Amino acid sequence: MADRRNIWAAEACLRRALEALLDLGHHICAKGFGLGVSEYKEIASRLEGFGALSAQEAHLLRLLAGYRNRLVHFYHEVTPDELYELCRGHLGDVEVVVNTYRNRLRANGHLLDKTL
Image 1 (tube, rainbow, N blue to C red):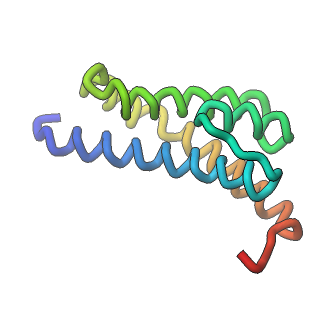
Image 2 (cartoon, rainbow, N blue to C red):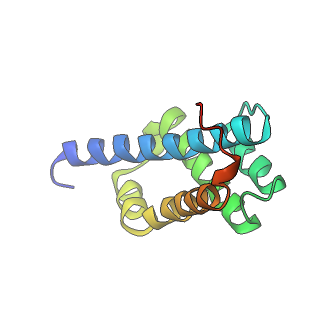
């Protein structure tokens, strides 16, 4: 926290991680279910509707999408202490959704288009 560059780096890495997580969900909706999704929070609802995420995981992904939106659109409201607490105590939330994606792909590998 003493070096502001660490705060900027944490914010940039967290934002990119959240965007990658949501982009993967978007890709699953498009390629796996033939559905275009226009808003990040909608990805969670659609994946839950298809059974790709549990209700708890979808809720978590919606929260992460909301936080991504705060980082992008209301970045001036995110305090260094808030960012620190999020990085210290909630990065596991990202891993929960990543692991669900990974497990879904492993269980349904036969459905993947190998030409892509």
